[in-house]
Image 1 (tube, rainbow, N blue to C red):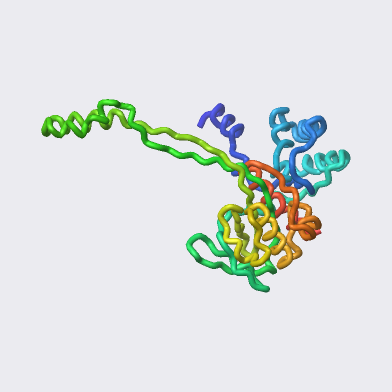
Image 2 (image 1 turned 180 degrees about the vertical axis):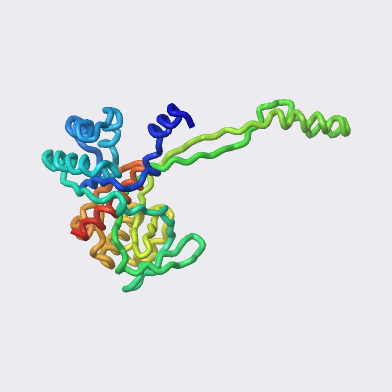
Length: 285
């Protein structure tokens, strides 16, 4: 590798592969920050370009910057606090990486365990003493569907080519193959997700409000999934009251109804990762 290639390699190094010897700044709240104030702080203290700084403060989670120089992280944190945004500075090597969520479709609640059950009917052990966070979100989910289409009008008449014998069959296959096309369409819908994160070992259980058996609620069962998923969240907090949540706990517990933030699918993952780490590091203080 010559000097130019080596220099380019350093410029384009994937930050996820860099040694985690730096520091991470975790906000105590999540969601976008004021564009008139906070991009400037990132530019001043981390040397970010303005487009990167703007994109960072628009993030839906609360992990603001990850694995940066510790001195720069401390100076940025001081500037954030001076502008009313409380935060923690933690070792990047200790930041918890959350796994993919496991969809569940029912539970078998006991006083000791959530009893999550997946689509195959398999039940796992999830003791309440290891329940750490509960996250609710209105999540925009995009789905792609590919359908085959036939754009060759001749190929639609090819069944009659059987009368032409073998040669006709060859022609039919050729025309039929030539007319094959596929069309991909994308649709999006907003779903309400509820996630509970357990540790030892860490795992995420996800409830899609429209694909869950709420019969566990008994006589508290409501006529729609939005009410049911919030009521179910309240039940879970009764079982594990020390769980950290991303919604108004007092209102949820009192009424079973609470405002839920909207976010992208990626943003929801960011919120889960943020609150898991915030909970873990606050407990150490």
